[in-house]
Amino acid sequence: MGRIEKTVFLSYRRANASWALAIFQNLTNHGYDVFFDFNGIASGDFEQAILGNINARAHFLVLLTPSSLSRCSEPGDWLRREIETAMSVQRNIVPLMLEGFDFDAPENASQLMGSLAGLRRYNALRVYAEYFSEAMGHLRERYLNVPLDAVLHPGSLFAQQEAKNQQAAARIAPAIEKKNSR
Image 1 (cartoon, rainbow, N blue to C red):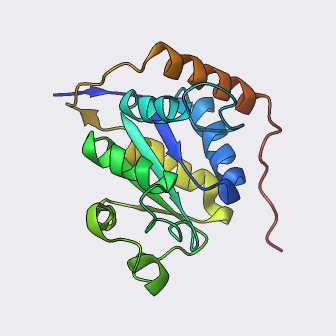
Image 2: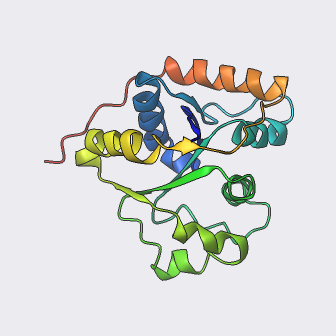
């Protein structure tokens, strides 16, 4: 039986930063060690910081909105590279479907080619803004609370320090509050 890990990498487009911050805040409030590129990596090796943190974390959450996959056909696209890395190092990948995301929509299906085609096979969690707390409970209890048999490799010292820098910046950001949909 594997161990339960509480380390998470959040992959998202900058346009979805408020979703990423809300998820970060929820998970960290429940004892998870979460990395996401909150402020941007100002100096140092960006690639090493990002890919090193994917390698060092058990879970990989990718935030999917109707437009998030739009540039994934470009080989150098960072969302694409993050997903491919998580797949290649066999992380527990959980697609979070936001704002009505649909894998079968033509604009998304056309982006899921090659190695990205496998993304649709992962068990995804649909997250509705009005049921955010409930969805995060399901995420923690059903999707992240799984034993992992994979051996995790610690990130480089640079990747570890960059994770601490991004976490510190995100912790002092104002709390994301529910918006009344009325």
